Structures are given as C-alpha cells and as structure tokens.
Length: 81
Image 1 (tube, rainbow, N blue to C red):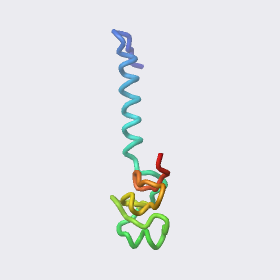
Image 2: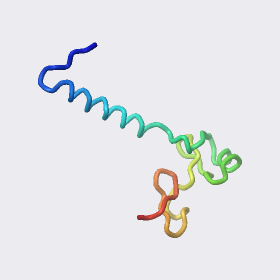
Image 3: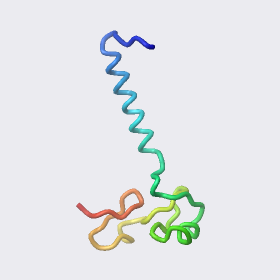
Image 4: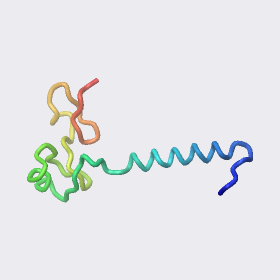
C-alpha cells in the first residue's frame, strides 16, 4: 500500500481520484440512449428518441423540437426552470 503522509499528499490524491471519477462518469454514454448508426435505426426501434447523434439515439436536437415549457438538454427534453 502507498504511504501518503507528506504535506497533505493523501488529501491531494483523494481530490484527484474524485475528479477523475467524475470526469469519466460525465463522458460515458447515458444508458437511456440506445446505440445507433442512423436516424432510421432510432425511429424504428425507439420512437421517443428518433435522432442518432454520435452513435446514440436522442429525443431532441434543439429546443424547437421539445415543445412549450421544455428545453433540450443533453439530447433530452426537460422542463424549463
């Protein structure tokens, strides 16, 4: 086991490890977005997510496609706040 005792190295390592975990979890595709190669794949298998973006089916491309009171965020229509 590593000995992190000099000048706060242990807490520094913990901060870096936490930051790494957060960054990796942000980059992972959301499980709610099935894999795709074309829009037609999404339209046929996931009608609520008809757009293929970066290999994943998403619900929206812009706020325009979400309707009143909703905004497009990360490929999903969410309530405006």
